[in-house]
Length: 148
Ligand SMILES: O=C(O)[C@]1(O)C[C@H](CCCOc2ccccc2)[C@@H](O)[C@H](O)C1
Figure 1 (cartoon, rainbow, N blue to C red):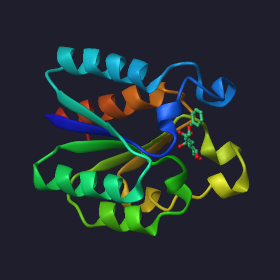
Figure 2 (figure 1 turned 135 degrees about the vertical axis):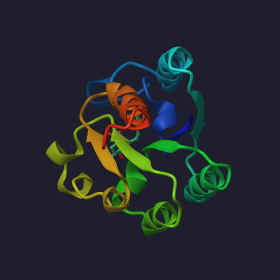
Figure 3 (figure 1 turned 180 degrees about the vertical axis):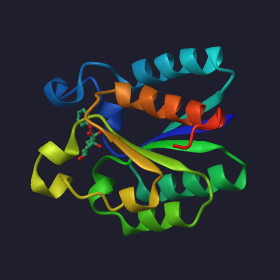
Figure 4 (figure 1 turned 120 degrees about the vertical axis):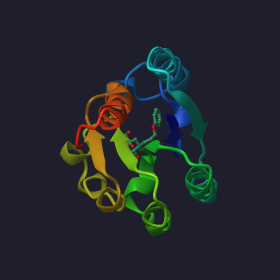
């Protein structure tokens, strides 16, 4: 199984700022952790972070065109604004799980709406960086035939 972990704007700052909201782990720490699980589970996993909406869209298209089995996607602030990313996800067959480190539903009103959730297979929000592992394990359960 091949998975892509996609991160949107400012997530390159993870662990460097606002640890009270997003924790102290860096994006590299998250990648190392997911790499270890992927190795155990014989999953081919790749990572991409961009602050550019169009680059994220191109990556979603590329994943679909190359037979990726799933995308774990933290869209960052584009979650709340991007019709273009919504349309990109709607335009591909590859399943997408939306991940948020914070619980967006308990934060400012403008963060409580996701433009992308309706076209994703699910959303994980508020589990810290553990949400990325939860999403990986959700794809593993789907691989076993669990209807998620
Ligand atoms: O909780 C999440 O994962 C968010 O996607 C994070 C976004 C923010 C990404 C920026 O993350 C930073 C991490 C550390 C320091 C500065 C920004 C925020 O705009 C969303 O509403 C919720």
